[in-house]
Length: 89
Image 1 (cartoon, rainbow, N blue to C red):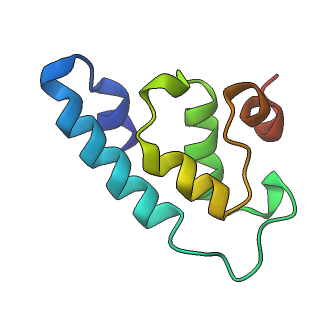
Image 2: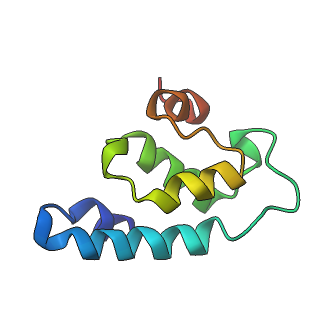
């Protein structure tokens, strides 16, 4: 899914990118966590991989539900803050 998301560019692929991102975040960051993670290390391996990928992307391209999912999980939503959070300064 991450490869598909990264490959989607241009107006004609906006729907594919949106759908892929929506599915990804529904699966990886479902609903409200029982307890918000205290640190990046408390996230699952898959969640960490997704956040590392996001930290390297332009946040302008993020669909709105990405920020919603990260807010629910109390993960930084700004690109620079997210990069610090995942340790890729």
